[in-house]
Length: 214
Image (cartoon, rainbow, N blue to C red):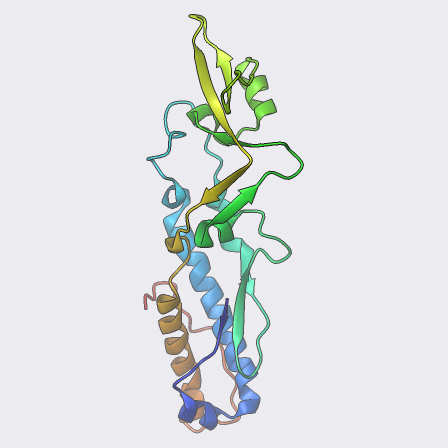
């Protein structure tokens, strides 16, 4: 995410363009910590959807969101803008897919295996067969992987798809309005030394308060 401070031209002029890279870097540092706190406060349960069929007895908690806060970091900053990045080097958490939505297609495998039973959540097909002591198979004419119950009925565990569309969930990240308000407050705070006549001063991000809510 890239941001530019706007509407504060007088303050920027007072600070001097040569000080803006430091100001923007300090804002990026404070905002990174704000976003990290935002995810820590919500925890894993925030990302769970109880309406899905994978909620129920036997569901394995993958703690999917536990590592998200520390994956946010400061990106490049200069005199004109600053940036905050997630998962530098790769988004292995798939957070971008949750935020923006999109289609995932099978690559090396013939089909995607999408869990539809609670105990299949967080388990691969091989792990499921090993952990549950069953053998999964695809019944003729069906796009599911099942196993046989003692009464002869079948229990579906995974659905098979060549691709799967995921609807966007913008609430998986702080809103741009929230972050924009935060950036403006931080900028004004960082401009205070310059407004007080300390033109040679340097911006600091030490003021950031984790209890702040824009």
